[in-house]
Image 1 (cartoon, chains in turn blue, cyan):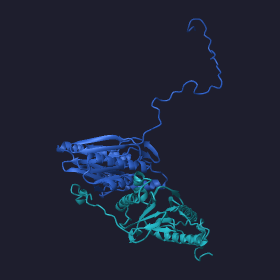
Image 2: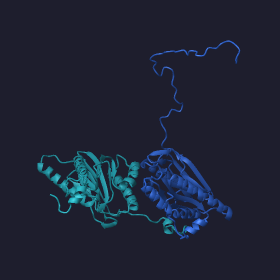
Image 3: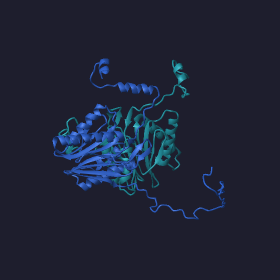
Image 4: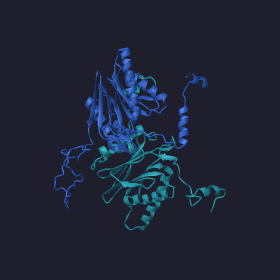
Length: 273
Length: 246
């Protein structure tokens, strides 16, 4: 520490030393490691009693589906949940971190967490990393001040919206929302519209697929409906398994070779020197 | 014929045999999405009347859907000047067809094939016509709706969209299009998609035309605008709880 202080006085502000190192490595031909992204459709909407969040369950690594049934709706607080799109590691880490910070805050204040607290913690973390933490989030929850829905972008900006979509399937889902959303939806209508929007992303976007997860948050109660819809079942798998009876495969010829004994067993005392 | 002063540069330009040829690298004045659906009696196309110059909405009365001959409608998105050039080629084509005076007339399938050849040949010379074209028509009771892209990709379908319409309108078409829609239902479906595009495509304007073609002929509507809704309570005071957002 003393040597670093002697080398250069702290200038304050952001330090971009690692950016210079990355540029240098790139010029030398060292490719940066690739990462697993969640090509995704995540949505949220505000209905009359609270907030409904929805997400698909496909995690992709380039063109390959890495996880057919991953969980993109993350727990933040008993009354706040967050959907994450972008790099899977970043969304997991950032939501876990803020979730822990919220819990410590709840112990300190003795009160239920507020959505804007989570929002401020997320946006200040993401801004300080200048967009390198690639997490695009839909944050929703109900607290003492009412239901709230926000989107958070990787560079740290936020929006407060009545309905929101993020991820590669966001346009397909937004088309459904823009044509069907209205204020004062009931719980069932809200779940139906959220499921339709996620299905639109699943069937029209290549980065999204598999199943629909839904989370309904109302005052005092959060219901996480994991795999609420399974619109992509494996239809041609036999549940009994496959049995291969003798006679399934035609036998062309049979040859039996008995194993010859190579060692001669001699009668006598064992270990006779 | 070699242009003076280009000799050293042209020796590096090995892909072009004709040194004086131009290359269309960027579009300048562009039109946004065109939507098309088949319905019970024919085909309906919809597009807005905007021509953007980069990020400025410069022209607000650009008609991007035109009738070709008796049986076809052509809608285009992309570079407007290339669309006008395509209309000139098609004018000549229809003129020669009429001059034959043999009782046959070019239908939508033929126009689609002709445009596909034109677009593909231009792209092979690295000088594409920067458009996505929607061709719709009815001939002898047979409905036809197809699309040609600027690189020569072409296909036929019950509902097509270009540009942003691919992402925003096609999911709605896939859910809600039906074979036996009446014209009113088709217009409602198109308007639904046009409204979503108006909200979410920055180069769309609120001035649309819907064109329909049936066995009886072509009708292109007068420009009109759609009602939009901005009264969500979350829009009224977005930063009430959350400072720093908008």
